[in-house]
Length: 68
Ligand code: 9UX
Image 1 (cartoon, protein in one colour):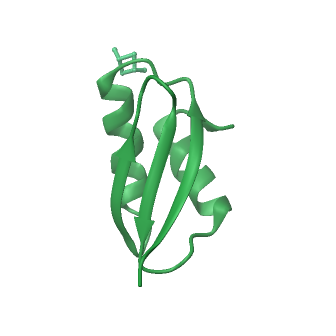
Image 2: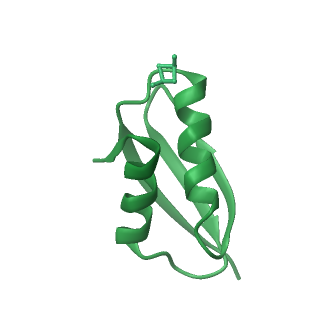
Image 3: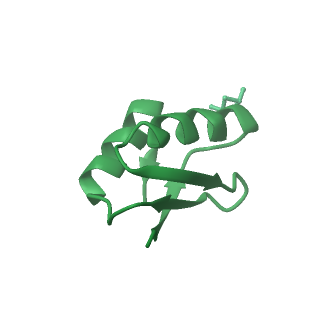
């Protein structure tokens, strides 16, 4: 049974921003799917088990953005 985590990421303004965030979050263990909406900053992450919010924040920071 998968679980979904939704976060809001600030600072993304184009599709390349979204791709960077998606790639970094995809590297977290157990992540199966990452949907990024640039306009709203909404990021929906599907994973095998609940994610550590700190790991999500670190991945987003690695991409150069922030979790609101
Ligand atoms: Mo597009 Mo996003 O040129 O930081 S990558 S604005």
